[in-house]
Image (cartoon, rainbow, N blue to C red; front, side, top):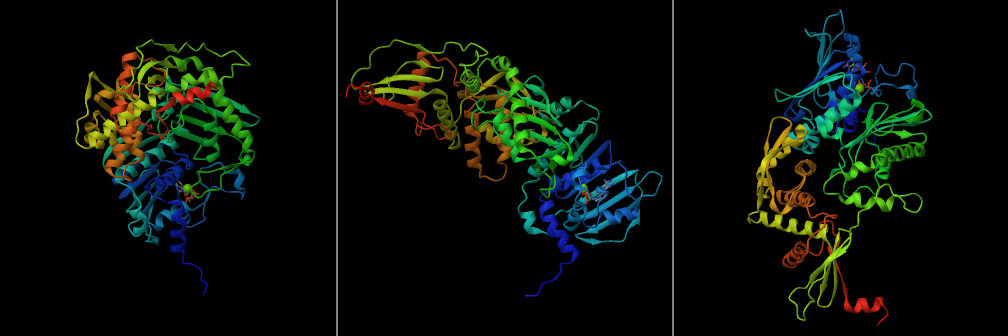
Length: 567
Ligand SMILES: Nc1ncnc2c1ncn2[C@@H]1O[C@H](COP(=O)(O)OP(=O)(O)O)[C@@H](O)[C@H]1O
Ligand SMILES: [Mg+2]
């Protein structure tokens, strides 16, 4: 076996494996460079989700021809002037991005410092062509064409252009959130898709990038300990989402996806959210450079803190305190969500008074005795407990039904029927409803519209960043239409191309089912309870909810006798 030093092109390509996973990761590196160059405006141009072309132009400090040459070499950076990596205040510092991207694409670097001529260098899949003068405005532009054209193994793992475009927008959104002083534009396939004006407040920018309704449904966070500061906004528990990708975390203005931070966030919302729901937050952590190591991940998305427990407790405590302060707002919703009803239990009634009075939720209904030989295995409704459980009497015992879980299962099964060609009854919205969403969400809804129609949800594109909802599945009752559509879009985005059509329908119907209006917390009439029981009897697989928990349990007469020591 002979050991050899690898040629430079190969070394760069190996590095590219870590840094450039998909168009969005190349875009992230280029935009970070533009930010580091002091640009106040950054223009992004994409074609075919960034697969065919991506270009980032800025009017930052720019480079002369010699510097450009150096910038394309590995481990060449202007960002570590004194060899102290802990003092790094820029987004970049590894000196790897440009040569890595250039090794797996055709890269054109053009730059023109103020008062100097412009220059352009092309690197074609690792091989540099001769530089030439170029006419361009002050600043730098990096054009990346045919990414991975010569790396078929990598190209194979890419998703659809639509999904890659969505990932690109997500990258820009994260970077833009941290820097409201910088303006951004995104063009895709020749059309202006997003304009983010410079100079907004951070709260305004976060709301503009995430969801405008967040302004009313969130609390501001402003806290700190020692030299560590935590600020940002946290969505109220009721403003939750079905996927975890609406959590934006920043350390010293660097977007990160750090496990410690995500865990702390989960801790902050513990008990406020159902297990499968996630909060919407944008949190900014500021701390001295020597207290955090940013050099633990090639894409610089993970960090390591010197004092992790301090950071954790700051987040859990800070977010929790802000949410608790907003307590009563959680209850203004007409249909109180699942989590709201759990709150008295968690605000530890023994020590302190609960911050609001829990309304009386239990009641009982008298009804005819159940005759022998009753045809109803799940019995007749006798009442409801905690606004959540239906109590029924069957011929041979007591039945307890989790109404929300049971209803979810029924909806899910009927949606399944839709796939086999049965029609799902729809309920037309009187005026229709316009729901504002980000562009990627609108794109997936538009693409999925025929499938969704089959399931009773009629949506149409309404401009770049909104959809018009015409009807919802009738069996959902009166759902919160905006929340329903948002969750369905999330679901479609997450599973975009990875799953078969029927699997996607399953996921989407489960998501829709969660929005049925027979939620926990709703008081049902006896007629409604009995209708629920009859439908459960008639529906296959109704014994388990979509999350695998039982939808009903039975205490047989024998069990009751045992409980009371009669047997
Ligand atoms: N848009 C830009 N404007 C000015 N200089 C740039 C730009 N992009 C890259 N550079 C220069 O090229 C160098 C190398 O870039 P890169 O490979 O991304 O490594 P890093 O950002 O880690 O330093 C940077 O340190 C910077 O000096
Ligand atoms: Mg860089």
